[in-house]
Image 1 (cartoon, one colour):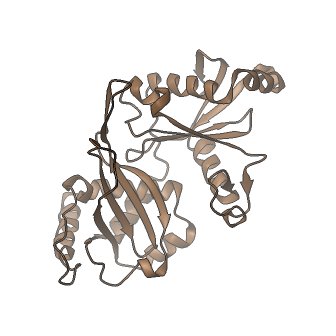
Image 2: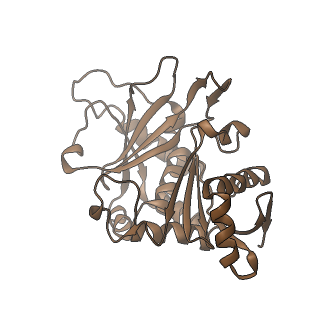
Image 3: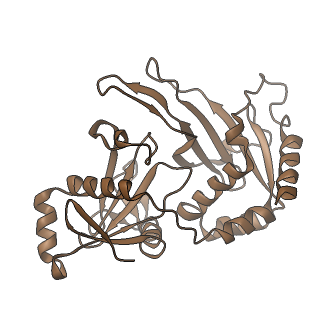
Length: 295
């Protein structure tokens, strides 16, 4: 493994500096984003949540996985020292934006500082955005065989939150759904149980995906703060919850609802359900304060 990592690092050094073409000096991304293990984690995240069968076919047809890194300057609030890096996979025409949060919320008296760079957005790129020699980007490469081997070995990897975090997720679920709706759907459930599935967490994303089977609802819980970083992650002003009713908010294609984030494509919903039900952890809820594992 050390030998392979050394080869990867050599490839990186060979590719750094090929970009730019006489343009302005390139801002070198932080070392933690350039680290091969971190980039493998990004690949694993994409493998679980975004890549399709044709993406793997494209990658298998190359000897190297090419990655472009670019430090992005964002329009932030005064005092916000958060940093952003765009990670581009040109062979797949895909960009991943990662963020290292570093700001304060004075009204709550807390500081939000994530331990590392976490995924905050993933988007498909147009052909015009993927050029032969990208200006302003550091170009890296990793051996494709190693990337594929590690993805295959980790395809069923399951990392779950702590018991404390699970209790917070349960409390947030109850609050998001609403007491009346929770009780109504509980009465409809066999035995009065609420069955919930929690997808494995990623080391490079502060988000949790939950399938509430009884209610037929998918919930996405996300935060700028590390999900296992303490109670601040679950304060009302610092938590994002997005619910998708599988009976009303699933379409065949997102092209049916352009510009709207209120719907999931059927393919996306299926992927989330697979990660929740097959790879995830099953729990049942009897009342808001109680969560029991059934596995």
